[in-house]
Structure formats: C-alpha cells, structure tokens
Length: 347
Image (cartoon, rainbow, N blue to C red; front, side, top):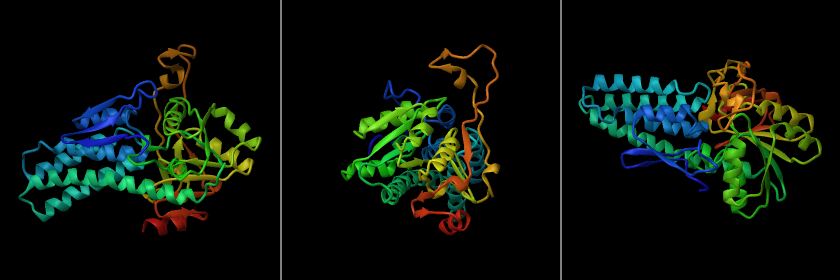
C-alpha cells in the first residue's frame, strides 16, 4: 500500500493528518466522535471512501462507553450519527456508512435485546469490516481500470484519489498504482486543485513517494495540455454519482471534462458503488458544500486578495453524464446510457 490514511489501534482510530502534507507526515489519535467530526470537517481525513470509514469509527467511539438500556443505546447511536452527518454534506459515503452502522445496531439489538454490549462490540466489528471491504473495493477498481492503461500513457487527474482518499490503493489512482506495480510505465499530470491544493500537496506527494512519474500543473493549464495532444486519458474520482450518471467531484472537474470532450480525450470516473446515490435523479439535486472564503483569499495563512472581497467557494461541482466516457466501479466499467447500467450494478 502506498500510504495508510486511517487505521484502528486497540482503542482509537489513527489518521494521517492530511492538512500537514507534504511538509509533515503526522498521525493523530482520534478517541471521540467530536474529534472525528473535527477531523472530517477540517479535511484532516478526506476522500469519500475514507470519510465513510472514519465516520463509522466515529460512531463506535460515541457509544462504546454507553452503559444504559438498549433503548438508550439506540437513541445515542442516532444522536452520534446525526452529529457526524453534519460534518460534510456532499460525499454520500458519509451517509451510507452511518446508515449502515445504524442498521447494524438495530439488527443486533433485535437479535438479543438484553445485551447492549453485543451491539457496541458489533459496531466496532462493522467498522473494521468496512475498512477491509474498502481495501478490496479499491483493488477491484484498480484491476478494472487497468484495462484502460497502455505503456507510455499520459494520464491527467484532478484532486486526490489515491490511498490518501481511501483506506486502500485509491479509486482513480488505483489503476496507476497497479500499472506501476506490474512494470507498465505511465505518467501522471496532476492539477494543483485550487483552492486547497489537494493535487499539489497530496497527489504529487503520493505519486512521487511511490516512484511514479508525476508532473504538477496549474488548474488553468489542463485544457492547453490536452489541446497540444499531451493527455491520453483523464481519470478522476467522485463524491456522489446521481442515478443518471451525473457526478459530483472536486470543483474544477467539470471544466476538465468539457476540455476533454472538446479535444477528444476519454474522460473516466472511478467510483465505488457506495458513492452511487440512486435516490437523486440528476446531479442538480446533489448538495454542494460551500466552504470558508479564506480558503480562496489566503494561501498558507498569507492573504492574496483584497480585504473584504466577496468569495464564491464551492468545494465541488457537477459534471453532466454526457461528458463522461465511463464509470469504473468494483463490479466493472459502465458506459452510457448510465441510468440503466448503474441500477443494474447496485441492485
């Protein structure tokens, strides 16, 4: 595994604080749901799959010391889940993981109403199961995506979709890691990904650390690179996929998709099934997180914009399905028309 973003250590979760990268590789011990809420909200742990696993551990941490009745325990499960759900609104894996944990708690409670301890222990087991499942899912996404890669291929990516965004080898970067492992030479162009520079701080660091050739470029340079024939394939991740195949991903993704279509470059999204939200008909229904304007007006704590200027800072945008060549999942690659194909995958 290129890097470990989150793990469970006896009585607490340990996460790699991604706000410190690339300057410092610092791990944090998370022993309460409040600390996990802060870690998710502040992007210390980030990436849709990793957020889901982190939230599952956070829910367990919120009830592990409960000593009341089963009714009180289930009420506390709901309260902790509700609190964690408010940390970030766009990544559906967060809600998927919390719903799964709540469902498991009720399943265990129904099986033995007199044993709250079994519910608590079962929740930790479920969170650990989700961690292992994500590793397997990433591997499968990588194997399916590997079919798209050929020696010498030049791949453009936006934001970070490697091991830092998951607990496995990543989503959109999973095929790249597997290609490197198998001796298939590919190179990656990484958008810097303003305003929080996940491409510059995380993707470039992660790929360089793994020995994979990577070139960093400004977000605004991606289109001109494609225009010159410098990109063979675009691979990006997703925080939520609507029923029709519209995809929410880090802001700037839709612009990359538009340029890819204009210049005839295949544009693929890599996404686990847990990111597919069939409850939303189109991407227009996906809630888009609006973040602090200081992320735009400051870099490294240094102001780069006039004092008092208004800021528009959405964390994500929506790429319409018509610009997407295919979606890579753990069960294979689907192509348009997406709606029927996605429903078939998740049923």
